[in-house]
Length: 188
Image 1 (tube, one colour):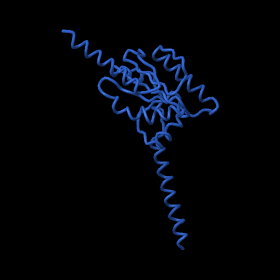
Image 2 (cartoon, rainbow, N blue to C red):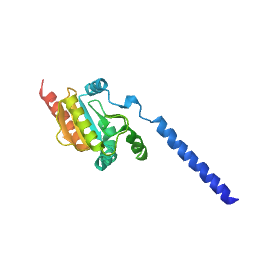
Image 3 (cartoon, rainbow, N blue to C red):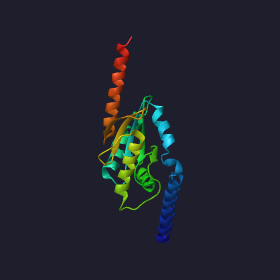
Image 4 (cartoon, rainbow, N blue to C red):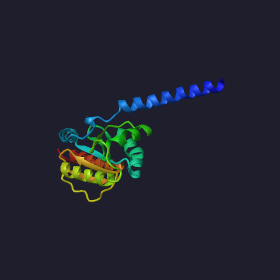
């Protein structure tokens, strides 16, 4: 009889866990508003003097580590009156929810590609999607197809820096801010 109670209890607990998982996925499912809309993105870039863009791919171990240890830790320190940041997912949208949930990351993001595509072609498509997006938005031809890619851009769509670390973009952004402050102090 005890075994039956243990089995029923275990099944009940399992059903609660599965139900919670399904509820989380349905609440946070990627809708069409998660895909980058060019006009909205242009307005977003113009909102503040600087924007840090973190291009991420779910299949890339460096991207995963960077999102956990670099971007997400710096995110709340980045967004202020003069700088903002945005996570841009280059891989298919079906991969982002499970990664964010399993690593307890709650950050806004936009996707370059919506839906799911073949594992065989994902690396090529993700890289070419990122390169064409950067070229179309900023007129900046990127030569290295690496993930993660971090860009620091200004509100006039000029790419100021490319790196693989958010901390580099923060350092460069702070340099520009110090330069502005020193110019303002010198001018009457």
